[in-house]
Image (cartoon, rainbow, N blue to C red; front, side):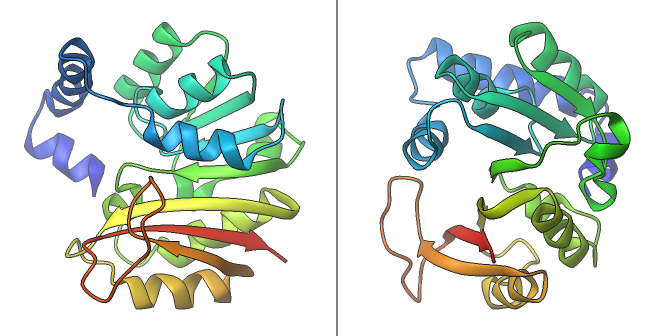
Length: 196
């Protein structure tokens, strides 16, 4: 779906990068996701930033001392991440085909972060496969933290069912990256999933 958006609107990737640069310049707090992930991870953890965009979350996690690999389908965003955060590994790839051992990254991850509504931009019907690939890339007991908004074509209930079918137990259901509980009318989900 992201690729379709880029085809419909050439320059969309550049706009997305500029949007966060503008927010940063205006003093916006852009590190809420990274703070939560950092609090969950042991020092020096291996973290996969799935749907990394221009590296905002993964770059901050690397700055905090973690080993970060980021994957995104958009080559413009991956190039921006590599330019701004050269201490991470940034790869172009489709999350529904995620196979990092085939790219020479054999060691599994302690934690996966998938922020920024990535799940809503997946090609229709691929979310179950993406979640299964997340599970395959985690250490036993490793966790995936996934955040996305309601009303974007992927219902929260279906997401939870898909996660469980992929071998990921739902440990925590939140409505925000700052730990507010998920309510029946919440318009955003942050789910903490664990590989069993």
